[in-house]
Every structure is written in structure tokens, then in C-alpha cells.
Image (cartoon, rainbow over all chains, first blue to last red):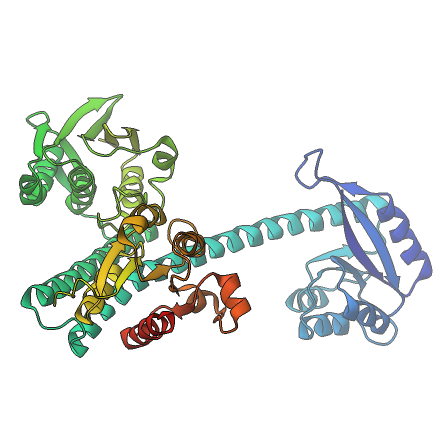
Length: 373
Length: 135
């Protein structure tokens, strides 16, 4: 049970007592649920000055404010509330609500009006509306805050992911500058190579990041054309061919002669390049990669299987999240941004499909992406 | 430069491949023998064979306190072994702790603590100082 604080400001004693009596025994269920019930604790003030003094300590959730008061008027109180940035929802009580005063009060931040004279039921209806509004406002704030936290989290992880390679490159440059590793050409060449490997990793991370931002913002201009999944797969194989050959990894493509799909070719390339390069990277030497394209349940289904290190079930669950890389002795030396599969999954969603993985540690993994079309 | 077989032997442990390589080549160039390990487990398996004269350990590897734990284990194995702990913790949390008194050193389990990014000159000075004090 939640209790909202209500402050009633009216110079008529009878009015203050009547409002308090009604609300002290009233309960609202804003979302019709049994668990969430709202009751009220009522405070009263005779004048605007007294009300402001009470609000200086702590603001009520709801303010029932008479327009016509001795001393400062209801409108004056509204202005003060706004100036002092007091957070409360105000319902104006008024006997002669002219259009002008209503507009003026709304301008100054009044949320609603309750015309005098009102019945207990009128009061309850007005209060119910305010409570619903408060609930919606709170939910919106909660969601906004959640989104903010997710964004901070992402930026913080991204910062670390960029800092690590930057520190490594700085280290290599420093060693080259001060000659603290001597001048053996083999050593110097290795220092330069490693620095380049780390800058390349940074560049890939930034490319992935830009791709992901474009997909998520929905602002990327998508160039939807008659594409073909077989062509996209063949292009991805071409890209990894030399790396695969160097480690004796055989790649097989099992796809129909034509696998047409209206798609953005750049997006298909991202999907296939990520899956196929992972299948090579995380494979064993002289392993196999099999790419299968077929139709299942009215969708195109792309499966990329490898004979590599595989994944534990817990790791498989997390694999498609941003920046998740499975850290262990086997993956330590394999470069990656931790964004590739997150991007693949987001792209699959754009095509009305999904991405998933089945894996057995030490045996291999099969990544499946479905695409509608 | 190939170090003399009698040169002091340093055990260097960090899960960051670049950190390991950078410090290995610099320490070797400075005349030390260097053995590297990328995890606490690997370092513990190596330690008895290597018989290091000094250890340089990253604080945070797989576990956040791997460096502390490894330091205690190595010192039990080779009493008096000087240990330098290297950590990025201070830079990232804004905490700073440097063991100066004997009591603090005992608590940290290390003889010196350096914050990443470390300058090699500084590391070299600490290595020289600790090896000198040991003899």
C-alpha cells in the first residue's frame, strides 16, 4: 500500500475538513491490480503563505489549491511553486472559473480543475485522474532512467575496450622511441606488427560501433535490392579464404542455385562476414566450416557450423549481448570486438528473423540466422 | 640481447599479451632473464622450475585479487622473493595505495606496487632496488 500526501489549501474550515474526511478513507487502484493500492494522508493549510511554508520542508504529491484565498491568491501560490521548483501536481479548486483564469492557471502549471461546489464523488474522480497521471509519469521516468543507465553502461564498457588497445599501442611506440628494447630488427618488426594489430582491432571496433549505432537508430539509409544469400555467402568465404587456407581449414557452401531475398547487401555482408570469420577464427587447425542455406518454416535459414572450440551453455546464452567475449585460455589470443554477434542478431531482427547458437565444447558450434523473405 | 645464464631471473605474469611482450623485451634488453605466464595457474605451475629471483605480477587477472594470492603463494614457495604488483586499479577507481611501511607491505603481500600505465624506467629502478636489497 502506497500513501500519497495531499495538501488542501482553502480558507473555509468546512471545506478543508470535508476534503480530509473523504480522502482519508479513500483508496485508488491506478492499474486495476490488487497489489498496487494508493491511499492518502491529508494535510491542510488556511492560506497560501502557510501552504508554501509547509511545502518548503517537503512537497506533497498532490496539492488541492483554492483559487480565491485571503492574502496571496491561488495563482500567486502557483507562481511561487514554479519559481521554487517545487514538484507537486496541483488541482485548482475554484467557484468562478472564468476561461481566462483557467488558462492562466494552466500556464502556471496547474494540472486540473475542480469546480466548486463539488460532491465527494467529484473529488474522488479528480483525485483518481491525478493518481493515474502520477503513475504514468513515474513509469515514464523509470524507463527513461533505465535507458540512461544502459547507455552509461555501454559507454563505460566501450571506453575500456578502446583504452586497452590504445595503452598497448602507446607502449609499443614508447619502446620504439626510447630504444629500451634495443635495435634488433626482428624485435623492432614484432613491436611494429603488434602495434598495427591493436590499431586494426580498434578500427574494427569503431566500424562495428558505427554499424550498430546506425542499425539501432534506424537512421541508416537501407538500400533494399534483389539480393542473393548464395552470393553473400560466397563473398564472405572469399574474404576469409587466405586466413582459412593458412590454417588448413576447409570451407563448404551448401546452398540452392538461387537464394533470393530483398535485402540491403551491406547488411547481408555484415551477417555473413561475422559468422564465417568467427567460424574460421574459433576453429581448430585443419578444421571444417560448413555454410548451409535452406528454407525452414517460411524463412530463409543460414547455418554456419565449425569444428572449433565450442561454448559452454552459460556462455552461449550471453554470446549475443554487446561486448560479450568469452574469455578463456583458448580465446585469449583471438582478436574480436565483442559486438559482431550482437550486430548479427539486431540485423536478423530487422529481417523478421533471429540469431541463435547450438554448441558443444571441444566439438564445435552451429550459428543459425533466419531471415524473412 | 641474450642475457647471461647467471643474470637474475624474473617471472612476469599478466593476462595482457601486449604488456607481457613489451616488458619482456625491455627487461631482456636490460640484461635480465625473463619467463612469462598469462595466468595465476600457469605461473604457479612454472614457479618451482623457474626459481625466479623476482616476480612482477598483475593484480587483476581472471580473479580481481589473483596478484595478491599469487604473491602469497610465491613467497611461501621462495621465502624472501621480491614481488612487484602492477595494477590498473588505482587509475580506474581513484584509490591509491602504496606500501611503504613493513606492515603495509605484509598486508599487500608485495614489496612494491606500481600503477599502470607504468614507465619502464620506474619499473627498472624498482627491480634494481629490490634485487640489491635482497643481496
